Length: 298
Ligand SMILES: O=c1ccn([C@@H]2O[C@H](COP(=O)(O)O)[C@@H](O)[C@H]2O)c(=O)[nH]1
Image (cartoon, rainbow, N blue to C red):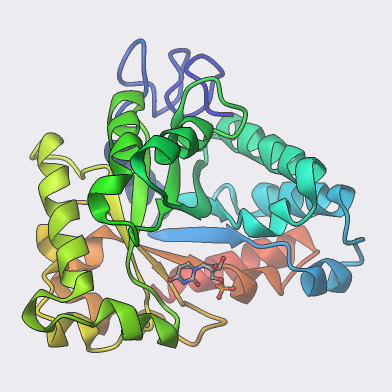
């Protein structure tokens, strides 16, 4: 778990993330540094039952543990971040979450940033509980950042936005998701569509961060959204925060699609791929090669 003095991101004892004594450097700055050093790729860790079987692993907490540690070891030199899919750990109950906690701790040791893909969202009083779980120093589930769902209104995310800011962590708020069904909600509203409003709120929220650094309030925008950004009049370059872009690989998007879709916002885009890379396992070198090839395409 990425606590202040564990030698991982935000450590006061060493490593590139320890620039703010006594606390984490802001997530946006840490992510920008990782992307500059390793490139704009996040590797998703999605231990689907079918993938576990293909790797010769059991669909069990021990299977999750072996899967997770293998992926981390394979991709650590090449990935700016990893993104464990929380649902696939939760389906194993408390033992699955323990496997996730071990992965988060190992990632901190390896100085690989983590994005817990939990997609949390609720009324503010309950949101504070989610924020504590995923963003508070000392929580066994604390990651460097977490994905959030703004369906209850962007402002309902306030406890997570504030705790992320004070703990040097980050959030990625769903804006335009990579699945085709997302448009039925996110595109609604004409020139001030739901997605446009979420992007505007994130843009305003990032004003609390230094103007010369990437903010810590990111957005999720699928690499598959095609012309939606243009159609909806959304300017991602103004967000001043990282854009997490799922959809590369298994969902069909390519690096060329991403450049066309994101245009001037592309430097802030962190592409994420799970199955497209994980299918190369369980051989560690094959996983690393698949990661390198994915990176080359960006
Ligand atoms: O809009 C979204 C938001 C999240 N995801 C998640 O990303 C990965 C994608 O996996 P692939 O195997 O690379 O397709 C998965 O965990 C999703 O839940 C998304 O796809 N789209």
